[in-house]
Amino acid sequence: MGLIVHGNVVKVDHSNKEWLKTTPHGNPTKEVIEGLTVYSLFKRLRTSNKIRRKYRNKIPGDNCPIIYALKGKDNLTTDLTSIKKLRISYNSIISIFQAREPNGYDLVISMPSAHNISRIIGKRLAGTFSAHHSDDFLRKLTIDEAFNLLDRADISVDEHKALSFRLRKQRQESGFQGAFSLKGIPVEFRSEFPPLCLNNIEIENLEPKRILLVDDLLATGTTLKTAHDLVQSCFPYAEIHGASLISSSTK
Image (cartoon, rainbow, N blue to C red):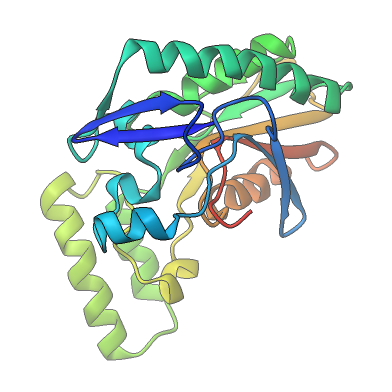
């Protein structure tokens, strides 16, 4: 029910108990993050001592090698056989998810990303629940907007300088209008930079009662919680849940 990593290739091996629960057994998982119910289709497993000893401090894919392989990050890749195995499990897991939420959803919103995984999963979930799908209702903060937020932050001069340096590095890579990333921001300052904002996109003729927010990987839940608050401001009477392809590693 797991993964194996051979060099740069990540493969699904249901008999291996590392990295991820790849079979329907034990999936999907459910957790509540600051009041937001989040379903995860595949459960991420804690890094075993065996893996830690093997890789020391350089664990492939930030302890989620399959999502990095699907995105082509860190030189990781996967194969068609593994994707087919995940697809078979996915179909069974979705049936379980559907049974747990018999009222379904009216609107499915994918989180913005440079990669299309959340869009693909969101579109498929929308099909499952016969819901409207949107992949542009939200957008990522730009680096320019992050600089403006930094100037208004209640922090010390030294902290401002340190964060400004990190933002300048992002600007060099992506430009002022490039997408801002929380990854390089220390955890204690991330609350100063909401990762998402509304994209001023109207969904015509739709007053959803139940909304599903979809992301590819659940870490701290900051993205989904921010999305929840933004979407709730537009649809104050809707019930909102979250869903991710892969769970956090703490549940």
